[in-house]
Length: 115
Length: 112
Image 1 (cartoon, each protein chain N blue to C red):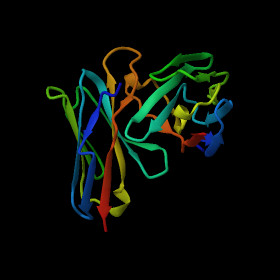
Image 2 (image 1 turned 30 degrees about the vertical axis):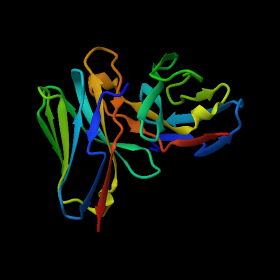
Image 3 (image 1 turned 90 degrees about the horizontal axis):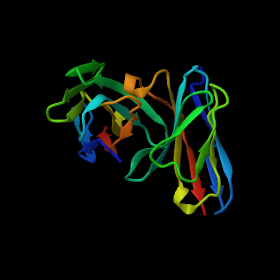
Image 4 (image 1 turned 180 degrees about the vertical axis):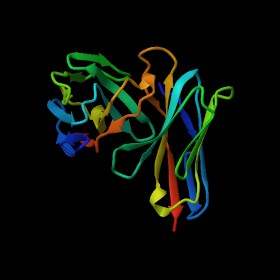
């Protein structure tokens, strides 16, 4: 199993550009989520999904869109990149909802810089 | 908003020593999880402890939970240089559909 994979590993954008961060998992997990990690801030939840076709907002959703057409894939779209979106982005999946007592499996991250 | 807060922010110890990291949180929780992050990598789950549990072990790791004090500790015994990493406490508040909320992390350096 590859686990959770993310592409690209690094990306540089100009302000106003759009892009999609890819995330895929091969563990047949229903629950997937996107976090951003900023220095001194820990991880903050952007969006999450409890299954194909179902998504919801996390703590910091503004400027990001998600969709979940399959169990395996959960892409994160930046609509119009801003310097404040410079961060490291992590995708995670889990076999059950975290409030039911489930660990999360994280991808290796995408380091995004917006100029 | 961040529920868990780790203490200390940074810890430097000699190989072979024990490392103790603490986490405090504000509201009632369903469970608490500890994760490790090596430099430039994703987070790796270490251990999960539920609100009705007081202590759990996994290899050289020991986690305790005191719900009356709203605190948890992670003990790494006989530390190794490979334990050098950031450690995060993450809490799941009580209530259906609660989300995992991460603290800011503790940087552990183990000197060979």
